[in-house]
Length: 388
Image 1: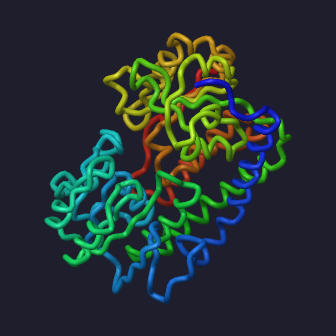
Image 2: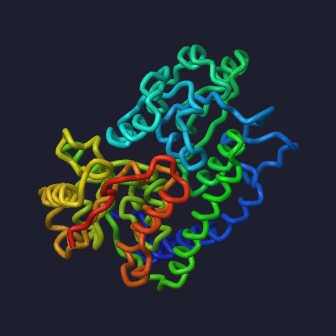
């Protein structure tokens, strides 16, 4: 990958600016609670008109009860708002890998009808208008990354299907709260959406306030390996955006961001070793079981998760990193990162990267409160682990 493209001093200033801006953003999140527009640059829509994440106007006569979703993780978002999220669906992509098989089984136990719902195209693949037309939902919830074109949206809307584009995964810092508030308005559960946004904003502010007090040069080098062990070669890594934004927000320096200008990319082992990261965070989940990668989440206990992390960290090259040799080696569920519940990941990363500053922060307690106060299907299992 080569040497870093900017000097150490310039990098320090750039990282500090990124963290400062993220902290400021967290302080402003609460402003969304009074009904912010989905894009700050756009004029406020007329009363009764909503704007989706593409800035498209959406008019609703009544709360939707027949939804189609193109990503199974929207079930988690709906589960924050509604006691029976499956009852709102008439179609979904059946991309069980994004939920994990055990979480899918939890949804089935509560709502057996999920197994028989019509299948539509996933946002991870080519857009499939035909399956959506056949399901005929009131509203199709499509992901920002789905690649749906304006002409395809027009085709659906001519058939009487409203299209709403949301984003919980591509740019969570910018879009998560807006998307959840919009989903609340669509389903007539706006009060529940505001409650969770307020909960998340309060926890984000606690992190931002403390990060703002860190010294400019107190940004440990962090190597995040996404989907750790998925393939024999090294190494999937976040760059600028997505998980990389979380690392910046909690006061770390994501080494992938120096050479990857997209949300995700690849690093070679020589580059990783040369950066001498002091913190290693692997992400994984049930989808890596066959590959022998990091497995944790619903259906896995603490012993299984830790043994999996030890196996991943023992691979050639990784085992000689300062982070691994000193025991600052951690694993986190990818399903819980790419989720409306990302505050749990943010708090966990903060405790790993700055353990002294965040020793009173308890992500397990946060997840327990989310389970108790918000979620229709509680998260059960081991979602993070460490070797120290």
